[in-house]
Image 1 (cartoon, one colour):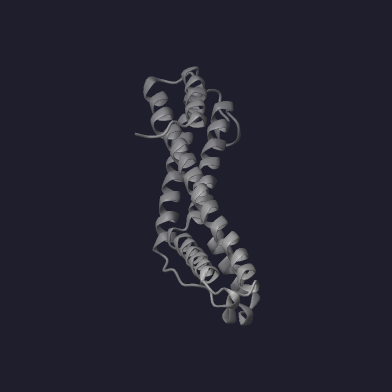
Image 2 (cartoon, rainbow, N blue to C red):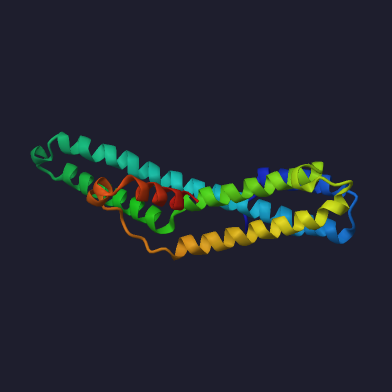
Length: 195
């Protein structure tokens, strides 16, 4: 059973009211609810899910990464019972596991991609409702084909970008290579990873 999401329920209710008031035929209204709004809520939900996972794993990595050196500096060698040694080992293992899971599942990358797509869909929806931007027209029925085409293009672009990003092999960055690499290729790599 899916968890109740008050924000998603409120968003769906508010947009459904706006859509119901538009001068469109039933098929066009159904498209707005079943395709545009459904995709918007899906991307929004996926962004929130991935953001929570990303923050949780990063928090474990950061806190553990700070705690381990503190414990080690306390001088584990004085620990006769081995309690501190086991604590350092356990925390280090947890930090490594959290970093590996984030690297494998790419929650941070997914969160930013889903959030970007959700916000672009939302922006296009508001422009359509207001008959502004690329949807400037005398009425919603006239602007609808352009809007529907744009929504489908956005969804298709997101799917293609997601598949391309997930198909890239994971290779950990080499500190030596980054320090000696020219600035231009590093900038190009950063742009490619940020899109």
